[in-house]
Length: 426
Image 1 (cartoon, rainbow, N blue to C red):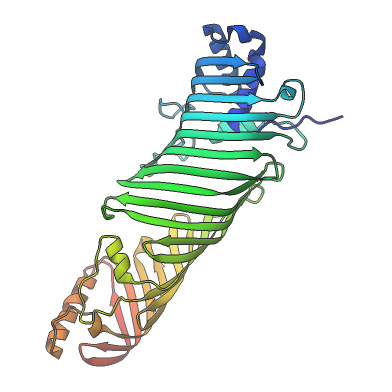
Image 2 (image 1 turned 60 degrees about the horizontal axis):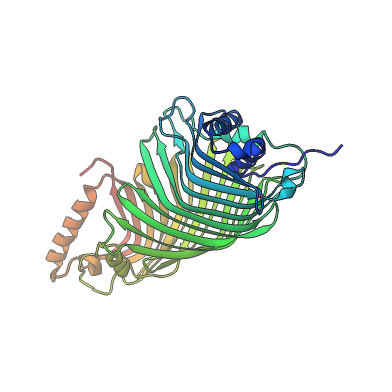
């Protein structure tokens, strides 16, 4: 017995193909209210959610095609009234062979003015998992054997809200182009979008090759190039540009492991390499990463971000910096350990836990006098300036230990110096 093949994995394509077949018998009356209601009812049975269809048209030349207008899928119980999915217009055309038992071959999926509203409510429940599981169950047994000639998305949007943390973001102007999509095969992919979150604006573009293998539950992207711009709030009026690339980004659905390797990024003149790994275990989802920068000028970077560093006794300090960090994010806790690097002539290493404002740093040597404000000539003036700087540091709500093997401070030489700052102390 031959097992039934799985339909197209993309949700809208699967839904559209079903509607096309179900409505073929009444194609002459597809624009009627009865046809639209019948299509909405069928889609409601598929998704388990309320569905409305504002416009419906079916054509058969040169290939079977379906056009939906003002199409929406409602929210599960307990979520907002705005639909989970809104689609202004969608057009799907398939091959003639797909109508008569052949492999699913979709010629075109074109979607415009669509909005997706993923959300989490206070108890952590989401509004998308049940829909995905329900649609996935429609797939039959056997190997996937389908193809999509061309995928086009324009003027898309994603509006996300997490009620537990009261965090939201909005991505707009989403545009996607992809072609020759089939299981386990490479295909070109291009994405553009803009985003708004907490007073910041983002523009982002990505291009590369992708591979999806639903039978093996593997998804890959290779040779990605990316570029973008961020602005708003504390960033300078001109904003910050960035660009980079990713060698391989992949997700294994069986193990739940996602990885990014051979990542590069340049932001405000800082060139860096990075790797990232996400996995799910007994403690929940953990994210592990490594970031290494090339030498850069802290003064130039501070100017680029609109926050120039203060003048110093030696204008050459803050001239060069390089750092690397290995980090992990588990159960909402971010730890950087180890973190190490070089600032001017000082080699340093340590650990950082931002959530607890915990800082541990060890340095080999530093001439603190060079970093003091200009104008302090005598030892007494330098000492007074240093004491003022330490007093400011002491007022910070941090837990810090800074060890320096060889320090020059206010004209004096110190060995094995230890500076401690306790949270809440002054």
